[in-house]
Amino acid sequence: MPSFVLDVFGPVRMPVVYGTILTGWSAGGIIGPQLAAIIRDRFPANPGVYTYIGGAILLAIGVLFTFMLSDKRFEVKGTAGACSGSKRGINLLFTGNFPFNGKS
Image (cartoon, rainbow, N blue to C red):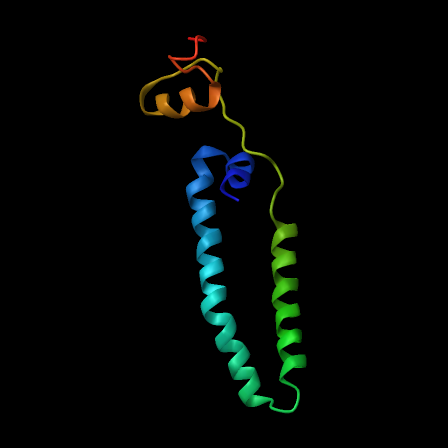
């Protein structure tokens, strides 16, 4: 998953996007079972049905957020061989101009 996030959002946005994904995943792991327990306590006749409906609603909200996002890929601006200042390491990494591979 980190390589997918890197390909889609680029090296600048990757830490923020991946951190958001992991935070959401963690929140779901903590809140999800508690919500299922609350539903089970409040609706003892059919807890499975209500839990399923709650999950479907959350899934629908996630799908709506997905459609609201842009699918435009992140593109690195500038020339391929340009390396300057703090971006030197990133440019060396993504342009393939490593000093030890014979391309520099």
